[in-house]
Structures are given as structure tokens and as C-alpha cells.
Image 1: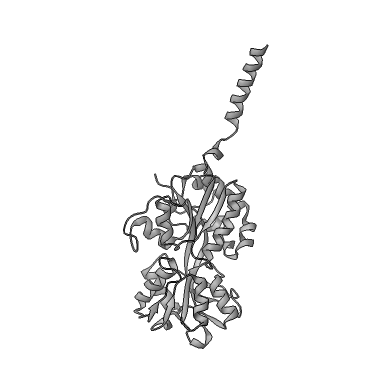
Image 2 (image 1 turned 45 degrees about the horizontal axis):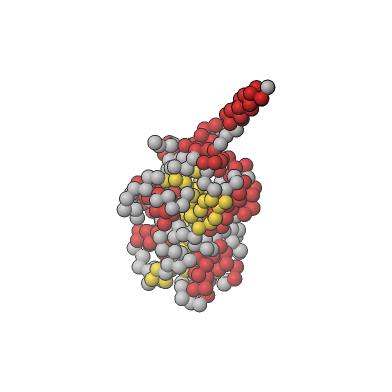
Length: 322
């Protein structure tokens, strides 16, 4: 009788192990999400996705970094497992072009989250109206190595602008520099509303600085990943009209070695908790299945499995690679 009970127990245990997935044991218990400086959109977006990891039973922390030029390096070296990266910068990293001196091919995408809207901010009294008015001025695109800083320099070079000086500081510090007259203008390529921009517009009688339609076409011809876009009306206080702007889609990236089922679950829960993400930061209203058509780099196989099962269209450039 005792042997029979033992046999039944062994059979039951074997059946249980077959039926119950053991993936959670293979997942990292803690993860860091590489974002950007405090006050930037990536920082707040990272905080939103911390809540998704909580639902997965994983403790996540937001890591302050240098942004979209710094994050690919950290991710490729597996110093972090997740990061928010603008795809223009990620493309350079993956292909080893532009700022990147070598290929960073451990990067894999999970989901497109929002278009980074390139727009400037200045005090009204500065009389700065378009990007070309940055010529001869002290300007800042946030921390050195971030996407905003990179595009500020690249676009300025394209237009032949000569900045008096480019200041590389966290976005939150640009507000005080503008207030103290030590900076003429700031520029951000990120989700909107942008924290520092919002503070300048709301508290310092600031204005939004955009592009002319002709200049946007010139930018797009030189940098195809910078689409012709606009800053929607009423994004900021007293901004009643849309402002011509660049649009560079940002995405959540991971390392190629992330377990497939963890990548799958992350994408699944991100869409299932869409309202939670949007409530945390308005820019995540664009993190929808339909907008995954804007992905430009190879997906993680686990994420792709989800999209394929749900019949969500994925562009050819985002199909998984070995």
C-alpha cells in the first residue's frame, strides 16, 4: 500500500511539473531600466514600466543614464536588461554607423512606445522663433550623449549653424539656467509633454520653438528616421496651434539573451495595462498594437511570437534575426 501511494505521488508530481511552466525561475529577480536624466520623458516612462514588471513579479528600478547614445552601450554589454532608446540612435548602434564606432548587435526591440517630438523651448523675450534662430546662441539638448544632444548638433550642422556654446546638463537644470540668463534655449527630442519644457512654458513665460516645413523636408532627406511630424496643439499651456517638429519613434529595447517567455509576457502585460501606462505618462498613449508598424530594428523572438499570435503587422526590418 505504501509503495502504491509513493507511485501515485511520483506520477502526480511528474504530471504537475509538465503542466506548470517553470519560466519564472529562469527570469532575473531584479532588473534595471536604462532611461535618461531626471526631468526627461524617458525617466518618467521608465517609471511607468516599473509597474508592468511588478505585475510580472520582478522588481525593477529606473536607472538614470546618458540617454539613447549611452543606453545601447549599457544594454549591449548586458549591464542593464531593458532600456528606452530612440530608434534613430539605436539604428546607429546596431549598424555601427553615425556616433557608434562598432556594431551593438545584442540589441532587440520589444515594443514601440511613442514618437520623440523634436522641439525647442526659450523665453519669450529672447525672440527665438524657429530652430535656425539658435545660431549664435547658448543652447542645450540635455545630457551629453543623449538623443536630444545628438540631434541638436546634427541638425545644427546640417543648417550650418554656429552655436555660441552647447551646454550639456540634465534637462531639469536647463530651467534654472534659462531663468538665470545663462542659457538662451533648450531642445528636446522626446515624448511630450516634456517635463523641463512644460516648466519653462508654465512658469517662465516661455515659448515653443519649431521648424519651418521646408526645413523639416531637408532634415528628413538627410535623416530618414526623423519623420516630418508635429507637436499637437494644446500640448503645453497657451500653445493653441500645432508646431512643425521632427518625429523619431522610441522603443523599449532588451538584450538578445532575455528569456523568450519573459519578453512575451512583458509585451502582453504592457498592452493589457495600457490605461495604467497612459495614466503614468501621457506620451504612452501611442504604445498601441497598431503603432508597432513603426518598429525599425529586429524584435526579440519572444515579443515577435506575441505579435504573430495576435496578427499584429510587423515591418520587414523588425523581423527577428538569429
